[in-house]
Each structure stands twice: as C-alpha cells, then as structure tokens.
Image (cartoon, rainbow, N blue to C red; front, side, top):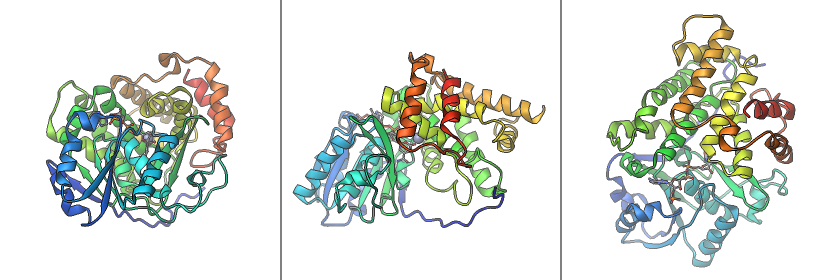
Amino acid sequence: MNTEIANFNYYNPTKIIFGKNRIEELATLIPKGEKVLITYGGGSVVRFGTLDKVKAALSEFEVGEFGGIEANPTYETLMKAIELVKAENYTYLLAVGGGSVIDGTKFIAAGALFDRNPIHIFGAGLGDKDPITKALPFATVLTLPATGSEMNSGGVITFVEKKAKLGFGSGVTFPQFSILDPELTYTLPTRQLANGIIDSFVHIMEQYLTYPVGAMVQDRFAEGLLQTLIEIGPKVIEEDNHDYNLRANFMWTATNALNGTLSPGVPTDWASHSLGHEITALYHIDHARTLAIVLPSLMEIRKHEKLGKLVQYAERVWHIPTGTDDEKATQAIAKTREFFEILGAPTHFSDYELDSEVVDLLVGQLEKHDLTQLSERHDQTLDISREIYRNAL
Ligand code: NZQ
Ligand code: ZN
C-alpha cells in the first residue's frame, strides 16, 4: 500500500460566476452567434421565473428549449434531446437546474457528437465502451447545490428498462462556465436542501475516508468543508431561512466537494455511491438518501480498514479528544449517522419500507455492473457489499 502522495495532474477549466443577479451576464459569457438550446427539468425553473430571466438575458441569441429532464435523468429522454440538437443544429447547450439537468446536458453534449450509438459511452454490461473525445460546448445555471456537477466533468444516467444507473466522464465534458447564484436556492424544499448537504458531505468523505498518505492540504480542505456542512446544515434546512451568507457558504461548499480539489494524489473510495446508485435504480429513493443509508453502515463494516483516517476524522472534525482509537471511531460514526438523521434523512432501509429481500437483489445488480472490487484498496468484494447492505436494514 502506497503511503505517499501520488503523482497528479490537476486541471479545471470551468469558470465560476458567483453571486447575486449574475444571470444578466449570460450574453457576455456565451460566444456571439451560437444557437443555444436551454435544457431544464420538471418545471421548477418555469414556476420560479428563472427560465424567463435566462431567456431575457439571451434575447440577442437564437434560442430553443428542451424541458422535462427527470430527477435521475433517463437515457430515453436524453436521446430525444440529442435528436433535437442534431435536427436543428444547436451549437451550444445551457443547463438550467440541478445535478440531473446538468448531468443530462453533459450526456447530450457528448452524445450529439459521438461517432457511435451513445450507449457505447457507458460499458458496464451495456456493450463495449468508447472514450468521449468531443462534445458540444455547454454551460450551467445551478439551482440546487449538491452534486458538484457544475464544476466537474462527470455525469450519472438512469436506464429505465435496464434498471441501471451508470456514470460517465471525460476531459471534454466540463461546463465552460457555471452561474452560482445562492438566491436561486431560496425556492428549494427542505428535502432537497437536506439532500444537497448530505450528497456534498458524502462526496467529501469518499475522498477523505481511506488511509493516510500525509496529504495535509487535501485533508485539511476536506475537514474544513465537512465542518462547514456540520455547522450550517441544520440552519440551512430551517424553514424560510433565507440568510444569504448561509446559502452562499452552502453552495460553494457543495461545488468544492466534487470539483477535483480534494482528490489529487490521494486514494478515493466511491463505494458509497456505487452501492447507493443501485438502490435508486431499483427503488427510486433520492440519491442523497441512499448515501445516508449506505455510508454509516459502510463505516461500521469497514472500521478496521479505515481506522487511521477514522480517528483523524473523529479528532479533527467531531472534536472527540479522548478514548481508544476504536472508541473514537465508533463515536465519530454515530455522530455521522446522527447528522444525517437530524437533517431528516433516515439511515436504515426499514425507514423506507424496504426489508431483507432487497439485499440479494442489490448485490446481484452490483455484480451485473462489474462493481465487485470497490474501495481504495479494491478489496470490497460482493460479500462485503452484502454485509454493508445487510447492516443497514
Ligand atoms: O425538475 P425540477 O422541476 O427542476 O425540480 C427539481 C427536482 O425535482 C428540484 N429543484 C431543483 N432546483 C430547484 C428545485 N426546486 C425548487 N427550487 C429550485 N431552485 O429538485 C429536484 C431534484 O433535482 P436534481 O437535479 O435531481 O437533484 P440533484 O442536484 O441532487 O441531482 C441528482 C442527480 O445528480 C447525480 C445523481 O446521481 C442524480 O442523478 N449526481 C451527479 C454527480 C456528478 N455529476 O458529479 C455526482 C453525484 O454524486 C450524483 O451522483
Ligand atoms: Zn452524490
């Protein structure tokens, strides 16, 4: 096991336009002459006036719309958007929404220029996989802090018939720019705010809770972001709390949780997401809520392998100074579970009316998607994943 910081390249080309009323600047950010397709979700941006603001800002551009991208965006819907882009020769995409709309737009951007059927973007049992080498330029107006998709190059797509949720990514699927206006979060329901806090929290943990390699900067960035979420989380979900700085801190934390800042040169463990995506694919539970089920259980089952970092997490993030290493780790895990519960996200399958029958079905899905050697050491076998699911019942 390597205990040094690994070599790394670090590159992030997405320009961030942060603050109040920045949508007005859209016309100066998108190159003149582009034919722009605005993409959005189930209608929140229509209801709350964001789409109108975007269209007003783009009055000098030739603009079209593609709405109806679902939460957990589906391949089936996005393929329709790809057809539209090709038929009407759009040259630029603008995603207005949360992670689902942004992920979907990344897929549209790549799929529209992909040489083969875009199903070959995925692999993982759906066929052979080709790399994404080109994509239409696109940008985003973020309405939901959670996924970091506004400043990273990855996406996750749902396949309805195949009951699968699969990721993709490439060096050419970064947004050119993202507008982050914290005031756009004021219309979010409590459930989505809590989801955003939990998703961000787990993204940070997956780049932190592995084994120590002495990466002081990455570790302390992660610990600072985790402490910020712990401090502001309960206030962010207070009804009608429209404190600007609170929302601004939340939004910027969520972006930094998954924009490449935390992972250079350090081991990462994306097992919580892998196990969580299977739960959403089969049972349609919100992405973040699946993570609230999986992460505390994973921490319990993998306590021994992750002890070094768990103790550091206990001491520096939760300020637990005393006890044996095992006691500190146990307390920090309990604190993590409690944090999710305080935010209103239950941490057991039974809270979602699911019972022991789900375990084998979920493990079967992991096997089908080749997710048989997870974690920073690639030693999370299907048997260990089964134990993690079972421990979360
Ligand atoms: O669809 P509309 O009507 O717009 O409503 C949405 C949706 O119902 C609503 N919403 C968004 N902004 C709003 C708002 N409602 C009121 N006011 C606003 N300002 O919120 C609901 C959820 O939106 P969604 O975009 O699905 O949420 P989120 O941002 O949490 O994205 C989840 C998706 O991102 C993927 C997840 O797997 C999931 O498919 N992820 C993407 C990642 C990435 N690209 O790096 C990483 C993440 O781990 C995650 O896997
Ligand atoms: Zn996530």
